[in-house]
Length: 86
Image (cartoon, rainbow, N blue to C red; front, top):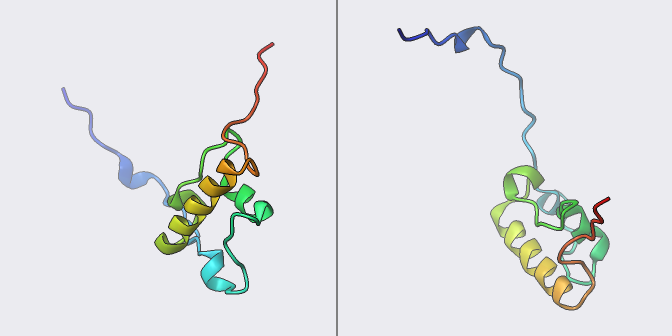
């Protein structure tokens, strides 16, 4: 027997639309030298955050990805984090 789907009773929460902070503030510059800004777009495991989480537009997400890869190559940012198992 198939159980009925009761998804219509669940409440829908309003999810705030994320905006690209680089489009909102043109003074912010995406550069491999600006490690403080680039580190905000890296997870605690060292991975680059996807667009749906960071809220960047496609153009700036590509620029951030390239800048992070350049900074990693120059050893300004880590490829991974060091986790010690106990």
